[in-house]
Structures are given as structure tokens and as C-alpha cells.
Image (tube, rainbow, N blue to C red; front, side, top):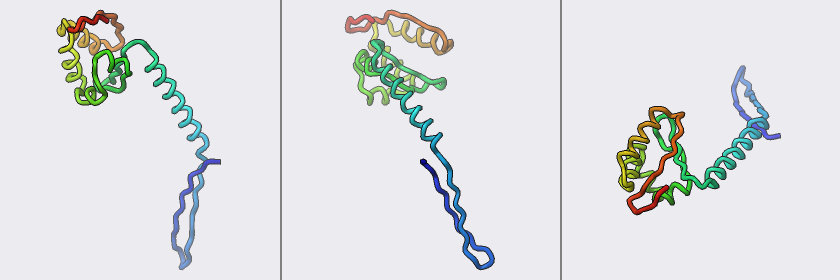
Length: 130
């Protein structure tokens, strides 16, 4: 079985003593494997969708995105990282749109009601419509 072993040495009464603690880590290993499978499934699902996905946490930090987002916005992972935090990324994105203020307004609305769903038409300056 998988285990962790902790050893310590101590002296008492002129004699050297050793203590060993052995922990069975089978359950932890199984949980780690299940988490890894779950993460792989989530990542595969995120990449398989036809939608561009940008995930943002409660502190407005980018926590994930898919390749479709990069392709749609014409960005590289480095550009996305350079545009973080979210405010800078949204400013970068708005520059590419026909109506940047409508985009900013939609993003503000999403931040104030994070459970809301929106379905917007986005018009890029280069003529693309999504």
C-alpha cells in the first residue's frame, strides 16, 4: 500500500531511540487521481465547445479560457496574461469592437449580477459578428 513514513530520533537515559509513524495514503492517492480525472474531463469539455469561454473568479481574476477565445479575439496566451487583470483585458477587447461602450456595459452588468446569463451579439471592427 502507498504510505508516508516519518522518522525521528531522540536520546533518553543515555540511549538512542527512534520513532516511526507510518500513514496509509491510499485514500489520498485515490482522491488525487479522481481530481485529476475530473480536471481532465473539464478541460476537454472546455476545449470541445464551439463557444469562446473566459472564466473569471469572484475577485475578477482570470481563472481559465479556451482556445476558441484566443482564436476569436486573435490573442495568444501571453497577450491574455499581459492584459490581466480583468479590467485591462476588457479594455484590450473593447478596442476591437464596433461598439466598445455596449461591451463595457454588458461586462459591468455581469459583474454586478454574476449569476445572470447574457446572450449578446458582438460586432468586431473587422466585420465579424458573433
